[in-house]
Image (cartoon, rainbow, N blue to C red; front, top):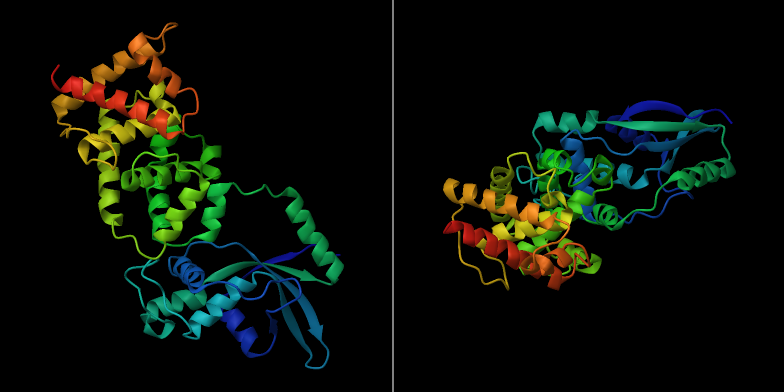
Length: 350
């Protein structure tokens, strides 16, 4: 069997092949068309923004009757079906994916964007002189080396809407913060663990302190997939809390206990509780003026030193236990949150 060829083919190429009956989309190797409109809209938005998508696999076959080449879709049916359907005005772009183009069918797009869609190039592997058995063997080998998806990677595959976009926006915005402070490694980021972390923080701001297990996170992704009224407010507040954290540590977090994920979570929660309030937490409000932040910085520095001693002070023993055991339970999150809130409020009058 010859090695697969690689080429770039545009949307226009696929449209031309489809019009000439030289493209077979529904093949034995593909599932039936199952993408919902949200998934199709997300793909079109990806194309409009000129972002890459996974490659397409085609098998080339000669049609001796028409003396033409038939291109059989081996992998990528949903992508090809969706873009052809969009150009055929079968569905619009959704607001959840692009507010500027919301509700626009292909014919509604400005000419520049129509051209962008038609000229978008897919990276395509072409398979020649291969049997059905060869095709099945190729994908069996692919699956051998694939890594099982974790919970967040599954959410990325299953959801395309506003909650997901918000979590990814904020996770990517603070990539340098996560990695430079040792909160997440590049490998963690590659597996979307920082996105899951941000998702849990968003849930906390809306629903209070909880365990936020897989099922609960999935429910939030689903509930706010189409509409997320609090999105703009939460993004603004998230940025404000991260600004306060940046001022408190001024690049010195990486060598402290506060670089640990559970503590970052609780630090964020405490500041958010004091600044805006969260459900279930009765806390005073703090403006986090420059003077207050400076005083809190010194308190947290001493607290960090105390927590790293061989013997932790008795008054902080519960916090020590809560940051080392069952860190994701509501009880331990509440203990850490209450301790940090008390520290910050005490710094106000120092």
